[in-house]
Every structure is written in C-alpha cells, then in structure tokens.
Amino acid sequence: MKAAVLYELNQPVVVEDIEMEGPKEGEVVVKVAATGVCHSCYHAVTGKISYPLPVVLGDEGAGVVEEVGEGVTLVKPGDHVILSWVPSCGYCIYCTQGYSHLCLKARQSERGCLFDGTTRYKKNGTPIHHYAWVASFAEYTVIPQESAIPIDKEIPLDKAALIGCSVTTGFCAATNTAQVRPGSSVVVFGTGGIGLNAIQGAAVAGAEKVIAVDLLDTKLEMAQQLGATHTINASNLDPIPEIQSLTDGLGVDFAIEAIGVNVTYDQAIRALRPRGKAVWIGVPEREPLSLEPGILAGERMVMTSTYGSARPRDDMPRLLALYRAGVLKLDELISRTYQLEEINEAFDDLLNGEVARGVIQF
Ligand SMILES: [Zn+2]
Ligand SMILES: [Zn+2]
Figure 1 (cartoon, rainbow, N blue to C red):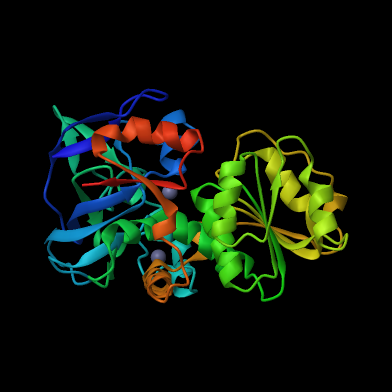
Figure 2: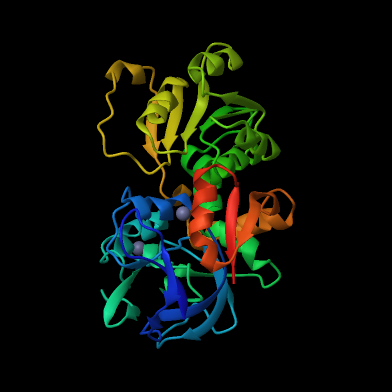
C-alpha cells in the first residue's frame, strides 16, 4: 500500500509502496478517506518533535474500518471513524479521573509503535514507525481500537478528519482547557489550523471579544470569518498595548498561544488581566524562556493544553453535532485538497500560510 514516509530530517517525505501487516489483538485496519496536513507533522520533519525514523506521518484522519483483530469490541468493519492520536485505555488514573487525553497507557508506550511495542509497517525488512498512533498519510493504517472513534455515516469524511487534530486541539483548548465564559475577552496568537479553531471555540463559548493576532493579513481575514471580532497584525508592532486598549486597559480574561515560540508564550502572559489565564498550545521551542515572576502577580495563570483537554470519545461526536447544527465551521477550513503524492507541496503551502487547512483525499 502507498504511504508517505519520512526517512531523514529536513528532507522531502517519500511517497512509496510499503508492506503492511494485518491487525494484531485489539487493533483495527482503517482505509483512510481523508487526512489533514497538520503543522505537528511538519515539526517531525524538522525535528522540533523528535520521532523515531523512518515513520509514516499523518495525525489528522478519518476513514472506514476495513478489518478488525482478535478481541476488538469497540468498532466493526464498515464503521466510519475519526482517528484519535490518544488511544485512551479507560482505566488508568487519568482516564478514570476524566482526563483521558492524558492516558498513561498511551503515554508510557514506546514512541512510534503500537501497544505491543512493534510496528505493522516495513520496507525491505526495515520496520517503519507509526506517527502519533494515527499514521494517516497512507491508504490504510493499523491503529489500536481505542484510537477509532465511531461517527455517523452521514458526516463527510474529509470534514470529520479535521476533528482528529486541529479542530479538537484548538476549539477544545478554548472550551475545555481555558473554559472561556460568555461575555469574556480572549486573544489568540497565531491563526493557523489550531489558532483558527481556538477562535471558533472562543466565539461559540460566547466570548464578547475575540482578538486574533498574526503576521499575515490573509490569515487574519480567515480569523474574522471564524469569529474573531478584532484583528491585530503584529508584524510591525507590539500587540500588547493594542490588546490593552481593546479591553479598557485591563488585558484579556484568556490568552491562547497557538504557535509555539517564546515571543508569543511571553506575550500571552503579558496580555492577561489579573485572574486571567494563558493557555499554551503550540509545540514549544527548546530554548529557555526568561520570565520575571512578578508578571504573574494578581493570580494570573499559565497552563498548557494537550489535545484541547478533550475526551476524544465524548468530545468528537459533540463537535460533529455542532457541525451538523451549523455552529461549528468545517467546510470553510478546507482551503485546498491534494493527492498523497503532493504531500511536500502541501507542506510548502502550510508554511507559506496559504491555507487554513490542506486536506489529502484518497
Ligand atoms: Zn496535528
Ligand atoms: Zn488511560
């Protein structure tokens, strides 16, 4: 079967035929219908996220269950599923406390492998790893049944795919991690796939002011379509005084960082009013961040967000219900579709800020 494999850092991804083994106990094979091109996969290309190589990339997909291994009870062949990059076990301390996005069994597993510590892909005898449990840049993927979230067959799979990463990570960072309240003020730094969805989440949660900050006017226009009430192009100015003047000099209730650079981690804190909460979603740099501790005085809070603090099995169907009700915008997010062979071009468009979301369709 055809897959997009990363062999070497900072090199183009290779689209080629690789061998795939059938599912072992508790695993399912999904025929991938569509997969979003997510920045976190590109972080694996540059090494910002370190992953064992070679690896089949792709962390945002949906498809149809083709085959199930022994002992699978959660899905059956023919089911339509979103691929969750956290296969929550249901019984570890985090799952039982309601934080299934932090599932210990998933976190303690060997990176790039399935639960038994091996992979189902290889080429010329060399094992190829699975990216983030999902590995959706491939015609078929083998995943733990816990990563297969069944959905209504009427939902178009290219829209459902987006729920697998960017929508859940961004939207739920606003609704679940930050817990944006009606009438509150929110700033979102970075309007890529994740940031745009954080903006949607804040708007749907009833924020009065949703301020989008980016360096590209084209992306700020997309932000307005998804619910931003104000935009700031920060390419030539410090956005903090602007944010303060939009919030009666107080700063915002919630500041969401969706880029992953120290400059905006710092700005997210400086944008806060007392009791305000900064939520860092972006994949962090490895450089230390220098911080004057007093900047947090007045009970300001900082929290990171993993997968939008979402419980995939609960939140993903809810997000689809919001889509069906016309509240959550998914169609508008897809700016361009690609063939798998065009994956490197899709990464270039992502880096140039030309797309809200690029989606590969099979
Ligand atoms: Zn992603
Ligand atoms: Zn668990």
